[in-house]
Length: 375
Image 1 (spheres, helix red, strand yellow):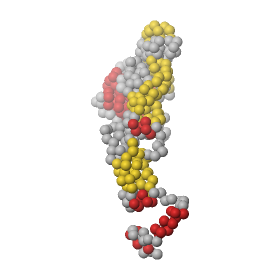
Image 2 (tube, helix red, strand yellow):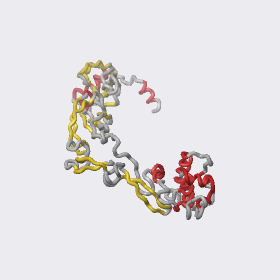
Image 3 (tube, one colour):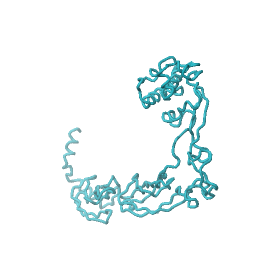
Image 4 (cartoon, one colour):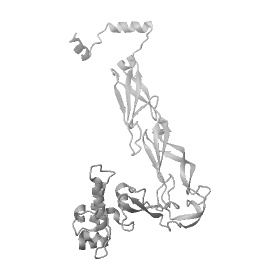
């Protein structure tokens, strides 16, 4: 039976509500009470009542008759030629109701099958590609050129991306790319719109299918592309090559290629962002007496003055001797870390010298005094 409640109250709108307000109210309530979403008792009946109200108020003729006669407009034998035999939401014919577009908006493809309205003829950008490239430490620091090989979706040169020869309007959908079907459900008879099965939504067919691409309009080709690796890239950095990816559809732009780098570690230098660190081994005498030490850098060797009394772990900073920032014209620094090596093997002469040295007072540092306080 038809709902006895006022249809405006059912949707929660005023009598002078606009079409947009009525549609918005229906969308909100239908989503809330749809049986596939709301499993509470009474939700299905509420959903039917909402649909019944919308079926009337969304149609100008039915709405006008409802405003004049109320529910009497839909009882059998109504004086003004109403819809005799109306029995709830399912009483209208398929011509009276088309809610597929509304359910499509709410649930992404409708509740009565896939009714996507995507325009298959609109220009579409090609897919992007991600390529991982391995670099040596030196290649990453100084930059280089690399040739990458990848398979790309490319427009078929045999049919110019059309997929066939002898274009003609699709006879099934008359060029619309969409077909309308009717479906009888527990809520009544619905009209739904779906992609044309013969033309795939393009609105056109061909007298002959392209043999090279099998009607797809695109083929996969292997391409080699030379790239320039900028100075200073590091593991995880990405380089975008615009417009060199897969071909677009219907005149759309090509996709992009993203290069992601993985940099091999160096046996001597350790990288921390744009700074580099190098451990320089010193003998005990070099650390105690000081010395001049030849130290490798990224661009050659330098001579450093090591002060007497240098301690293990001391760092000497060389400004601008690090790695160039790939995003700006600035270099990091280089840090020389002193590593005093204690010999584990001594010859007799060296042992004698250390024994003579041990007879002198070497406990001059305050650390010895603080330690002895707790003995």
